Image 1 (tube, one colour):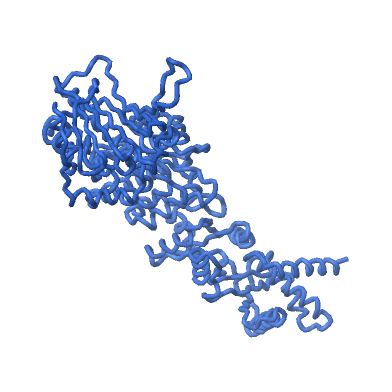
Image 2: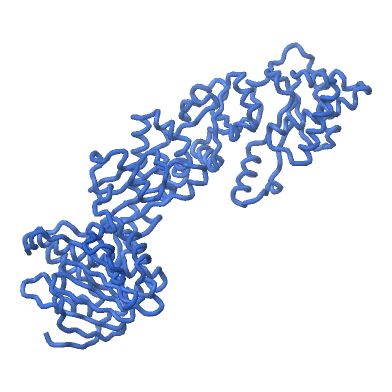
Length: 621
């Protein structure tokens, strides 16, 4: 062919918005685009060979090589794919708003089932000019008798075409890097980018540093990628150890996951992937999930909320969906309705897997529950459809270390507390209340994760008759001693004396004090807190990052147990002036003991409590 010069035909209304988008995103996108173009070129040639449109040499092995040369300031992306003729270069490179994939698929739409090819060249190719001052293409078409052609441009609208000395079918794109982007010619930098985007590319990918000689003349270079990742395999052919190893290698984790969901579907859209449920080291681990999204085994991005349900972002995994409607930059989603359908289907698959695990492996399900329950609860709050699918497999751990569903708890406690669920959020702090419940054969569940405060409100909103009460929110009739022959007037008089005594000694006239005879004789007093005000205080701390309890009423009540020996002693000596100091000591001590089972004492109160304890013990000597 004769040497040719000309101007690139640019449809500005199509090209400039995308170029602008690239300029404000990470620059390494140029490598993703060029290597993806090479993979598309190989896919085209492979498809033509499978259909008998061309014949490949014996032992032909598809591969892509990225070659860097820091001294020459060049990067080469080399493939042995379909290549291009001079006419195709003019059409797909010079008229840059036209995608080669469109014509290819139109020609072979009746023969080719794969619709995943975005385009061999086109807009993605021009991302190279974000980092290069000049770009050269050397390409040889697969077509018999084709002549190799070169194309070169310095990033403006002018180009130059000529004959190339390339002898192998395929394409080499050479980038002459500008001074600001020399870092990409560093082998370690390029390796990092290639591993990021192409760890699972379907064709072997190699990195060559032209400035580094191999340690041995015959040293074999290993590919950077795994061309057949685990998610591409049939779940029946995968072992537990393979799943665990894939998880450790992909996410650099030392701890094995609890279990996983292998997605492998062809209808209503194609999607493969593995979602792992990690074991939490602490509750805040739930904020560190990562779902990697792939398009034909090419990494697109982490945690794409449009595709992946938000609550799944707490987990770890990878999803490969070749039917994703991406535009030519391979990042930005189109067709919102279709994307939402994918998201809903993922939600369904996860819910189905959890339900199957509950039904078939209930022991394992309960074993995993402490780790997975924050995720499930968050999913219920965020996704109504998810809640509808898993509501019957949500379980609660009781203070007796059993696991029950909400319906099971309500059914077996309906005689004692109809439609009320008592719960504990700090087993150690609320041990006294737990013992009282056990003594009276009452049941409470443990709700001690950050999300539980929101979750119980969510459940109450879904069932207006349902009520959650913390174990220290009130004293039920089951814990009170039934009234016997005690004179009502006398009982009222004693109660008033107790209330006034505590208020006077503690110097708090606003303190709510209530006297009751409880079945348990082991507890002299306890603090009760209004459920509503407690929830508001906890939510304010969670969202505000600081204690905003002053904004909400502190509905604490000191409940004094008249069946305890210490309280009876107070009542008997309440008018004895000789015992006045001892009575004051006991009142303060009883109050502090009640507060200790409710919440930690502040430093000043704790110091006074210790000194008072010593003083009381000295009286026994």
